[in-house]
Length: 303
View 1: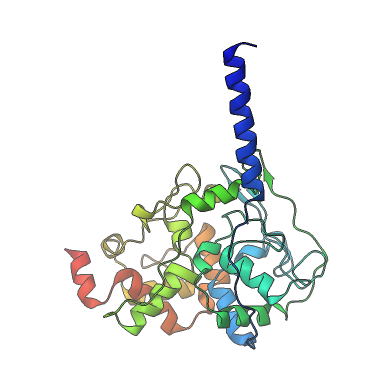
View 2: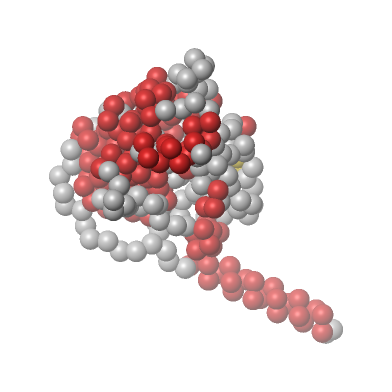
């Protein structure tokens, strides 16, 4: 047998071993059981802030709440948000709160397989046990819908969940939600919402060849969103240049109306309609303050 053939066979064997190792490679980490009582009202509020209803409901198709969302059409294929109602077979009715916690905070399903990053679990990894308990309590009030969401329409190799293990190793990072000393409570609350629950960076940050956010360009805008949508820069300097103020931005997040009198369209219109318009005025202002900065930061952004 010729040497090039032997080399090729050896390379193929090594590749097969590498893939096999990746397939069985365990991910995630063990956590203590959550035994806290959840607050339904707070959980419903957090679900709105986190975009759960907007993503997992096909409003345009007349779908039932949380029974599965409209497809996210990306360069890798079409991803369908799943049914997360209390249905035992088609939703999450057979789950435990710990299954739910692992899915939300670690992006791992009940079988130990990784979710695709179209599910913005990286932004939720700092949710507390109480946050999870509250969300779980709220989801338990959702009527079951006995329908499965369509399977993802994604071509090989992007359809292989085991490949997401390598993706996680290369690109998965924790959100920047921890309080910053010296900043106001309002600014830190806005940080927790913008960088975490509301996952603004999921749309307003460009992506690399693998669909991961480019951390060095956080909030700089993204012209290649699913369904041919675009998200502008929400850097403080750009927002100030466009005439945004804290009050105007908070108002827009509640009403969808911009300072020019125009209305948000596309995916941002859905974010407002099914999410941010339900938030308190103080939380909307906190998000605006975090993005624009406190008064002294605004002076810097103008210069």
